[in-house]
Amino acid sequence: MNPPDPSRLCIHTMTTKPWSLDEAVEHFSGAGIGGITVWRQHLPDDIAAAGRRIRDAGLRCVSLCRGGFFPAVRESDRGKAIDDNLRAIDQAHALGTDLIVLVCGAVPGLPLAESRRHIADGIAAVLPRAVEAGVRLAIEPLHPVYAADRSAINTMAQANDLCDQLGSPDHLGIALDVYHVWWDSDLPAQIERAAGGGRLHAFHVCDWKTEPADMLNDRGLMGEGVIDIRSIRRMVEQAGFTGAIEVEIFSDRYWAMDQHHYLGKILQACREHV
Ligand code: ZN
Image (tube, rainbow, N blue to C red; front, side, top):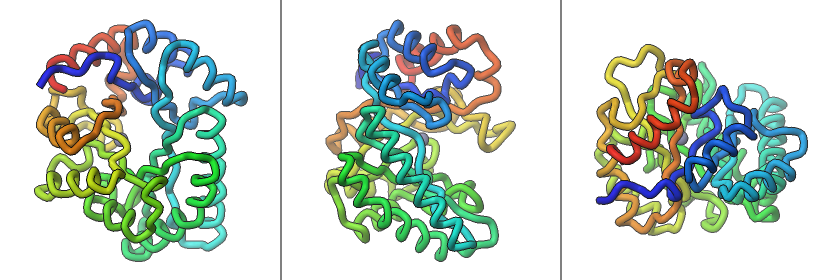
């Protein structure tokens, strides 16, 4: 399998968090990278103008990160979460991307089954607006280590089940992040299932370090950890996925580095390990 051409790559603005959106656009484009995924905290007030700057720089805006976080103890808070997701759909539309990644949410103390009901209800409540805006929602299953407080959707099978339950195949799908699903023996079958349903919308890469200093912000650069990224890429591409390969790394260590140097390391890691 050949290394991906840089034009197939997309980098998340969170990966190079110290850069502003405009800096990221300039430097990604200058490196020949094809796409960018914008995190909402990097959106300026004039979102449409930012979308134009991204396109003018020759970049595709692959997705907006992130919506979700639907479960809450109080009903009023569940309503606020729905409002926030409706806002995210409007932002994606203004930015000119047709995809929003959902980190579905979980609340310590709330039973997982109940969180999953809140997630299904929350997505169902915002789907009509997504359809209207021409925006797809992609459920990103999170590694079970985050089941307490970030997402009660922890496997590809759960994400596939939720998509089946809610219908809307054109507007609800899955974002596969190797960091979250690499350990799952059911992964090949669930990739086939997602792709067969036309719902495999995104592919995120980074690496799982065996002794992370922090469970959230010490993700590895591809090749630094234990994930067989190339095998998973082969699975998604054999299943028909042709979208961007998105580099999404949260790392205090790399954020402290000169970001130009880091971007060079990302490109090298993609050549050698993706
Ligand atoms: Zn991801």
